[in-house]
Image (cartoon, rainbow, N blue to C red):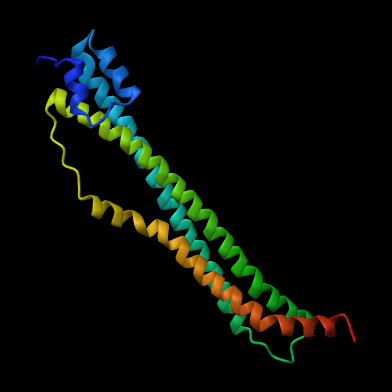
Length: 198
């Protein structure tokens, strides 16, 4: 198969190819027969990086949902323990402390997971850009057919890992707000009884 000139390959790519693609084209022209295997190996490396980032996103989202299920269970158990007047002051203080601390843990961890997921998607976008540019060159040189999916479907599939931390953060913020508004007076009364304040 006749190798087209570099200028012809460059014009087939929207804009100017990345420096990496230019180096591949330039390095391959002295020995055209090994160009396709080298490009395929680079394509596999890019695919592997994308897959690794999606694995990280999956594990982080799974950890978020699992850990917060335990936190919500702890909140429910604390609420079911009741607020009996017969309970000691120390017990009431500990109950109030848990109802404030657990939502704080949930809120902070939601923020960290959201930031890590957004960072992973940022890396995916950069690698995808390099992958598309490489595929454009391979399509021109070797006649590959591109079968990209609908961009709307791809974006819709990327939304849940970005939205879950926000939703859980809102839930924890609401729980924390109700805890602060409802328990601070009781906490103060329990503290006064515990420390024998006037």
